[in-house]
Structures are given as C-alpha cells and as structure tokens.
Image 1 (tube, rainbow, N blue to C red):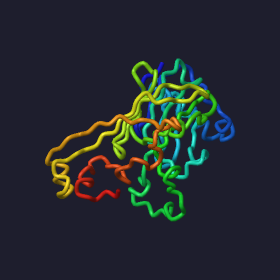
Image 2: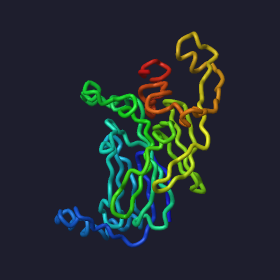
Image 3: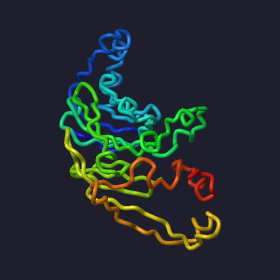
Image 4: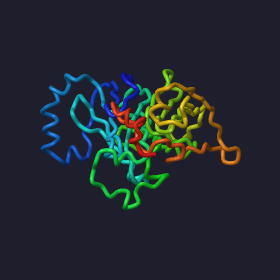
Length: 270
C-alpha cells in the first residue's frame, strides 16, 4: 500500500511486504552486498518501506529498499536525450506491492538552474543548455517493473506543457498536477498507464499586475496589485499547448528558499 505519494528532493516512501532486492550488481559486488545484509536488522527498524528519491543534479531517480539497504533500481534521464536534467519533484501512484512495480511522475527543474550553485561548469559554453532539451521543464512518467526503471512518457512532449516543480497525485489517483513558479503555470493531467498517453484536463497561468508597474521592481512587488488567472488553450491545428522548454519562463533561475528577496531586488536573471 502506498504510504506517501508526493515529495521534492526528500523523496517518496512507499510501503511494501517481503523484500527481494538481490539484483545482478548485488551478486557481483560481493562485499557491498554482504555489508547491506549485515546491516539489514538495523535498517529494518526504519520500517517496511521502499524509498523513491530524485537525484537532483544527478539527473534521475532511484529507489531503495529500507528493509535491506539495497538499491532496487535507478534511471538517468541523460540516456534519453536530456542534456541537462535536474530531477526535481516526484510523486508516485499507489501500488499494492511497490517492490513488484509502480509508476511515478518526475519533473525536471527549468531554466538555467544548474548555474545557481556556483559550480565552475562550462555546460553552457558546450551547448548543453538547449532551450527545449537542456533547460528542464520535462515531465517524465517512469515505470518500475520490479527489476528496472523505464521511461514510459515525456508528458511535456506529449501535451506541449513543460513544467518543472511541484508534482502531486490526485487523492483518488486518477491523475496528477504539476505547478511551476518560474512560469506561474499549473496544469492538471489525467492518469495514463503503460504505453498510454497523458492528456491535459485543464491548465492556468497566473500573472501579477502591480499598482506600480513603471516604478522600481520592489514597489511593484509590495504596493499591491491584482493576480490575473488565464485558462490556457491548446492549438487547434496541433492539439498541443505552447509551453515546452523555456517557453513561458519569467525567470531563468528559480527563487531559492529564503532567497525570494533576490526577485524584487532584481538579482535574478530573466
């Protein structure tokens, strides 16, 4: 039974039953597998769960069996043509036995967020920050079949809506929602499984109309205004929305926690 269904970088924990995580690498690595088995009684005090987490700048997701301390499977979005995946928030659909299989949705952080942390990288100079495939806002639907993780769908590519942050499963598990503060867009999706394709139930954009639009940014931020909510429509000729990649971004970087002042003081690019 699913015990938790949504998370950011801290991950998602799912309940389960008997553990069987003896994969190929566990058998080959010997000492590592033995160490995990030795620690199994201590790890078991954490509860009978599997722990699903995004790897952030690692560019993927992984699932660990807390009863054994072993990694059951992982996926890397680099392998699917994403040149700079920042695996961000994820949410898992309910599963009767997550050790045998489950599906989850993982957003990738948008814009040039890889540059926030002061890493001396040349990723931009090497052309890896492509507006469509290198600056996030992908929504990956991934399946775990009990042995490995497989990319089932890029929801952003299927629907035309690319978002990179909050990801939540509906209470009845019939769909999910993704929201993004760099675009100020929220979208609601139906639940697809296996090789099915996701469709959009509805999507909205939020725009701030400040009372001081011609003054300094701080006045426009603090001196009141109106939030305008607009329903997004898909193109009649393609059946897709026009919000993939960087399209719709208001900021190149996210507003990092406790760094919101960087926006109204004009210190965020975009």
